[in-house]
Structures are given as structure tokens and as C-alpha cells.
Amino acid sequence: MKTKQIVLFASGSGSNVENIIRYFQDKPNVTIAMVLTNKRDAKVLERCNRLNISALYFNKTSFRETECVLDIIKCAKPDLIVLAGFLWKVPENIIKAFPNQIINIHPALLPKYGGKGMYGDNVHKAVKENKDSVSGITIHYVNEHYDEGAIIQQVETKILPNDTPDEIAAKVHALEYEYFPKVIEQLLMAQ
Ligand code: GAR
Image (cartoon, rainbow, N blue to C red; front, top):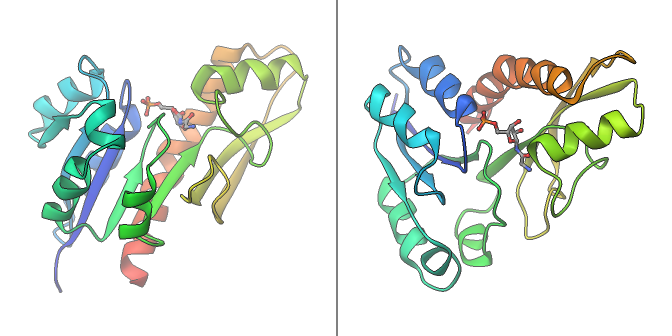
């Protein structure tokens, strides 16, 4: 069977990226082709260096106003593009070039807490402020609107009244680590 190629995008720490890399490390049918980041000093770059995975930084202009990033992705011939903690909106040229091949993970139960500005800790603080008793993760396809593509899987976790935003984040991260690599694998195997 041909090896499936994944291109990952991340903007910060990259703990999901590391988890995905480790999950597929011993699976010869899936390769992490490269990791792309929009932050020059993102911790994800250190992780990739340590794990011996190619990683590249790009800026806003090359992403939004040129075909540069698109060309780089095309070189990798990805079967799936995975946004794992990536905070910029994906431009139309990339979405059009890879229909139904770009997925994202969101740290809440969409459509709640989606849209511009709703990412990472902002989401968990909002969940806390609203005294929600449940939060979770949403894995979905990416379209031209923030957090609005078709949902692939949602998983819930209970939130206790005393949970701090950090504790909510830890619960949500645990779900991400458990479910995201498996969903990626299922999508690749179904292609
Ligand atoms: C993750 O919780 C992910 O769901 C979230 O950013 C975090 C990145 O953590 N993504 C979004 O908020 C996208 N709107 P990580 O860098 O440790 O993987």
C-alpha cells in the first residue's frame, strides 16, 4: 500500500503535532511530510527539530497574497492537511486546491465558542464564565468560514463547577491527544 502523506499546520506549542507525529512514528503506511507554522519562534519548531521532522515558517504575505505556501504544500502531495492548533484563516486558494482534504481541531463543542478570536485559552475562559457543565473537542473539515466546515467527530468532557480554565484546557487536551490521531488515521484509511 502507498504511504499516505500528512502536512500539519500549527501556530504555537505544538503538543498536538508532537502527539500526532509520535502516533504515526511506527506506522509505515503514514508519513508526516512536513509541519508548517506562521510563528517564527513557535515551540512546535523545537519539537519538530527534536523529532527529526521537516518544518517551515511562513509569513502572512506568503500565505495570503502569493501561491508560495500552496506550492510548498503541493510539493508534499498530501493526502490530508491537518490544522493542529493553527490560528490563521486558511486562504481560498489553498481550500480550493484541497477540497475535503483539510481538517481542523477546535477545543470546544462547535458551533459553541467558534469564530474569530475563539481559540485556545480564550475558549476555555468563555466556557468557565458561562458556567458550562460540559465542553469537548470538535474535529471538522475546513471551509472558507472560521469553524464552520462539516463536523467529523465531537467528544464531550464534564466540567466541574470548580474547574479553572487551565483545568478545562487539560481535560480538552487529553481528549485531543486520544481522538485526533485516530480520526486522522480513519480518514486516511477510508480514502
Ligand atoms: C489546541 O487545544 C487546539 O484545539 C486549539 O489550539 C490548541 C493548540 O494546542 N486550536 C484552536 O483553538 C483553533 N481554533 P497545542 O499547540 O498544544 O497543540
